[in-house]
Amino acid sequence: MPLARRVASVAGRHQFLTVRVAGGQAHPTFKGSGDITSMATADGYVEIAAETEAVEAGETVEVVLFS
Image (tube, rainbow, N blue to C red):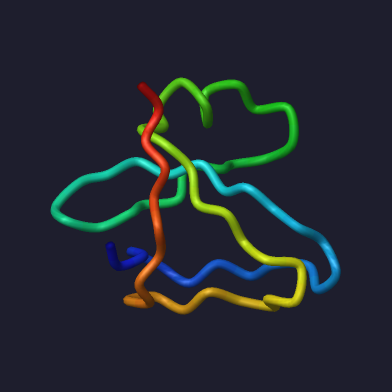
């Protein structure tokens, strides 16, 4: 599924990015540390490998949906 917008990532840090699925795209929902609404509006998450510095808009990502 394509990512709706570019997401920067800290190199060396394995991350999980919450996303909302809409219009055939994965839309990042993360707003800030401690913002619980990010999880409340998410449909799932995308895993970002530690060696990744950015995931570009339109890049295909694997979305793991919450059950």
